[in-house]
Length: 420
Ligand code: EPZ
Image (cartoon, rainbow, N blue to C red; front, side, top):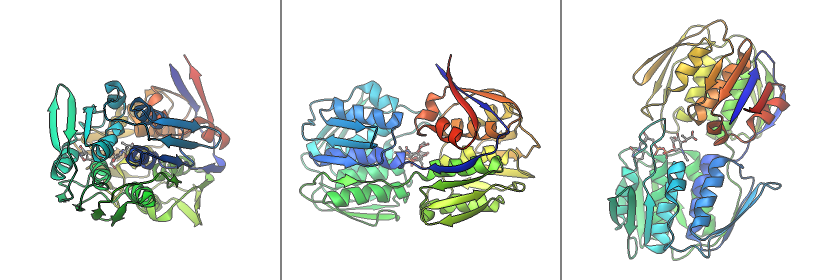
């Protein structure tokens, strides 16, 4: 078992480079199934979740080569066949594996997958994914913990999503690219990662318009070719380092910023009184002065991202005044609150809202990461806390952050990963 130990009170300085977006790379790897050809993903984040989805493709017959020197992933999906089923524990281990359903249905007309488990932050249903596949003419059968989809050929259709689900938008888009005729997805999710997936698919020969807006049009094509693709930067990783600089009143330079994608995060940090200067694809954070209390309501993009909610709660724990965070996207995404309270934060949870009374100081404690972003929030508080913090269950953090302790150590943090 591993723990991350942090001695708080150290300022950060220097530069940090942001990796490609985990939530872009995962659907793009799934989409490579559609081509039956070779694709190369550049600057890929070497993360546990990426390793899992690569194992899923290998269990289906793909040849996947991960080069940790160049951070390139080469995927040959020529030998994938629909007779194989990915091991259920792989699909259940990482919900995003479910993103292979659309590509498999589209290419082979048949797929059988274990139902993805829920996770700590919510039940994570897949009803919108399945509704979309049915609208495209697939026969969907559920039973014994599995979902099976069959279709001779998917037929384009108009689909309205009850909720702008990121995963459902991606899965339906991937199912539609080889369907017969045109598909229109309305009330689609607008996250930048969806636009990145469409860029990859269009470079393979797909015909997708409107990705990144609330209406996406997909004209079915006959075949797709493998391509080389460099995904967008990870806006959540970047936001995480921004809050780390803000809470430690440090000045750091973060390289790998897309200002448009970061707008809701930059706006909220500015509202908190964090000064910043954006230059090309970098931002300099001038952590100085007090953090002001603000209210946050998480929303689908371009609203404030739910994946930054925990990190902002960590920052607001030491703000001047009272902040209110409302989590509208997931039903159980405040599990970091009790752990932050162990470090002296003053947080009261009432259903989907959290009231955070800023405190003068936080103190180090033994805490536990409960999910990926909750773990990041604990690190952020630990950097500013008085004394030592020990964070267990760090495997959650490794799912979304490349080499976080070495990146922070290089910035001057007093941080170690230990085995125990
Ligand atoms: C993606 O998850 C991200 N994961 C999540 O990031 C992110 O928090 C989430 O989008 C929201 O932005 C990846 O991209 C791999 P959703 P996804 O479908 O697609 C409900 C992280 O920290 N819903 O947009 O699963 C659902 O219950 C992770 O990097 C249905 O009701 O999110 C939830 O309340 C965590 N029916 C809401 O929609 C469905 O069929 C948002 O879910 C699908 C979703």
